[in-house]
Length: 431
Image 1: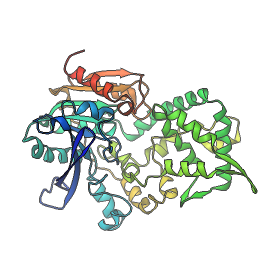
Image 2: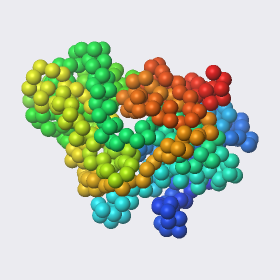
Image 3: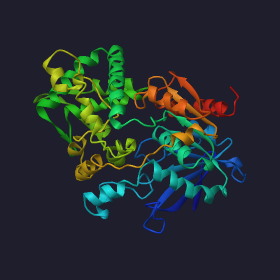
Image 4: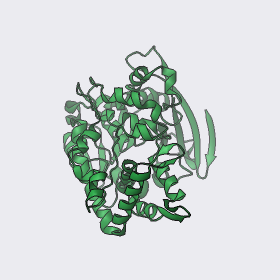
């Protein structure tokens, strides 16, 4: 263990060894990394533990600088473990550089079947007694971390003292098709709101899309395409995302000796926003997190998109309608344009075609739940369908919801201590 200090905090890096396949505990082992964080003034106290599960899939736990955001509130009463879920951050990373160690695409796809919420929860249950001495802990799950928390309630509620979920109540039984069939109208509403706020962006988006369709530029090996431009709509799910998208668009063009071209500033911003180099598991496993039963996900977002022709950029350019942004969806073309994903295209195809997924949620156990649970549900969350979330809330005994339009999906980051305070008050029956 390696301990060090930041302003107001003591941090300790912890490494744990867990089975790759929990049904074969004596088989191959992988490493899981977690960063323990405690207030410097309470470092020697016996405090209850709070486990933080990041959103994603595919993102390591946030790297904080000091007691900022919600972490500052959490360390007032908890010892916090910021967990890099398997395959992310410092936890045996899975990416285009490491996955070839497994073999070819078939072996890589088989390996990645062990990186869903069911395995993540079993990791947590092996780690918990090493830290708490066997005592249950509080889990705070953001987005996909909330999906993991609901799996935790289904599979190992005895390990939980309290569960707090922000923007992460999954449907218990929806296929990926159902998830995206609900998502596209939601995304369209977000786009309409953006264009109402910034009407000048309607024509600018059409100009950018037309330029990309004609020229197909590359930036550092990343192919910039109309579909990739549309996917910048993922920004619209955050509290300041509409403004960020507008500022990105206003820098799109420059006049050069060769005529009007896309600016280096815009191309680099688009490449960075579209790149999965830092979180490839998001692309590889994004639809697999919904897999339950024999039916494969089979590129659900791509197939369902055909039911919403208004999202087709070529059709929009032929007429006078707006180009609609997308976001929060993964498509086969991602694995053609992004150099971080290109070597993993066949692996992604095998995962998309895979059936026989283990069910993730035990509805009977959730209906009999005794663990205090509170969830922030964002009123028109672009990433997690509100109707699906509220149905799940009603299926978990004792779960209390805070439904709010004050924040978007990034409410825990934007609202910080206030969001955490509200959820803790709910589970403690203080409001």
